[in-house]
Length: 301
Image 1 (tube, rainbow, N blue to C red):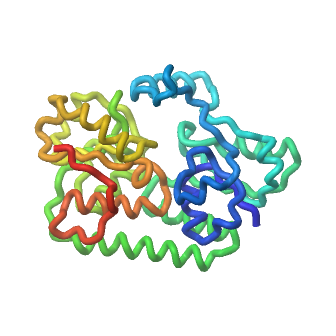
Image 2 (spheres, rainbow, N blue to C red):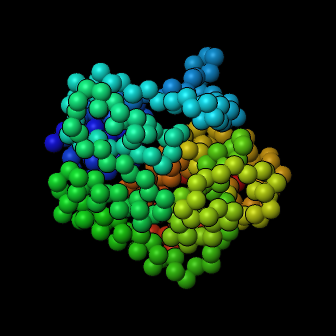
């Protein structure tokens, strides 16, 4: 089977299932595991860079994305020639977020244009258990259902182990920010990640999309712990932006402010969200956290 992944989380699932050799194409953002970089890139972000080639500021990214969504402009460019040449049997896509990847409908239209008969599976989890269910869905579509059930069971066992370790700990009030300008509260599966790690996620509802809020609302949440894990950013970028937030009066009451690798452990609904739960547990309850993710977060205050 020839598999094409059009979102980084699906790429991580494919490798977790031991199907890396069957993966023929990926997106420009598929960077884990490192072997993903060896695959043909079929989807490229259309977001412009800054004037010197650097990443745009958080406010500028938000403005560009908002304008694109309002106008119906695509945020990703699909290389249809590469797609046709690869001849995939299975395409993994999504419809959950127009900002995150090419919608599955656009993929189906492209396949129809050159008469391909590939199966398109859309992965659209909103809850933590649905993230894990995505592993079994990909496995079933790829013909390795038993292997997928084994991987999913391993992830569920790790979540259960975290729950046992933090069961008696006091649940600290947590605000998880996935963007800084404007501030966005992490949504979908993130509140459940915080709860699974022994925290109380304030301001955000499980399963609901991440949403912009005012800094005043962040202050009113009275968080004991603020976790800044910007969507699509690695740890170094999160630390750089997070340090600039420390002077905000709305965060003054928080006893702890952390920067975390949002790209790896929070914003991608793949196997590493379980690593993210373990990481959160280590941040919130170091006395009973157990194993954690090396270099996944940095305490800023």
